[in-house]
Amino acid sequence: MTPEAVELYESCDLMIVVGSRLRGNETRNNKMPLPRPLVQVDADAAQGGRNYPVEVFAHGDAADTLARLLARLPDTLDTDTNLSFDIARTRAAAEGRMRDVLGPYRILADTLAERVFSDAHPWVRDVTISNSTFGNRYVRIASPNLGVHALGGGIGQGVAMGVGAALASKGAKAITLLGDGGTMLGLAEMITAVEEQAPLVYLLMNDKAYGVIQNIQDAQYDSRRHYSALATPDFAEFCKAIGMPHRLVSDISDFSAALDEAVAASGPRLIEIDMCAIGPFKEAFAGPPAGAAGKEA
Image (tube, rainbow, N blue to C red):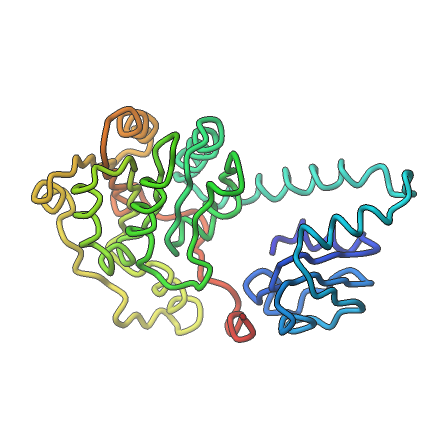
């Protein structure tokens, strides 16, 4: 959770949480103060007050519960007229700070933020540093059903999810964000993408490592790195072997043209971002606070 969002929440007089688990990852290990009163709505009765104590828990379907709540509200509410402005300002400030820490990958994030939304691409993400830093936070989707992500937090599902999203999509190509570590756990499913001629673009961020594990080892274990460097395959040769067009991007300024080319072509394509050549993020991402996942549902 960003400092800007924390400041906004501190100014609120009521929070209604609908369907969210209030995970440790998003709440600073469940230590972030939330507005009071805190009301929770969830279809799962077991979620009531599970990660935060609440004043009211409504066990019910989100749409039905919100419709009933709306029907009970007066026509005119005495609300702060600056709230919408404050939310927009908070978002702009948080996104500005986020873009700064991306370093050279700001170009990539900006390009995806514009293209994914304007062309209504399904946006599929594996668990990877790039998704945690900007994929989940910055890239907008044109409709709720166009966002696909493994909420369980396990890596390696993105390759297969990209195939599914692409074949289910009736419109633009699916764009699938991957890391090299996760990709190696589901590499064979790229053959399925070729066999089905799935309309998708794999965007592979290759740092030849479990990058977030290395960052955690640097931050918490005095840079004692073990079992985090990867013997990654030559993805160009792999793609050649299975018949999938491949393009290597070693200069980030070439990314926009590479994406245009891949989106315009038929069938699956893989764009490999050579992070070793381009360089690191300006600020290392070392995951959520230690223990943040301990209270996840």
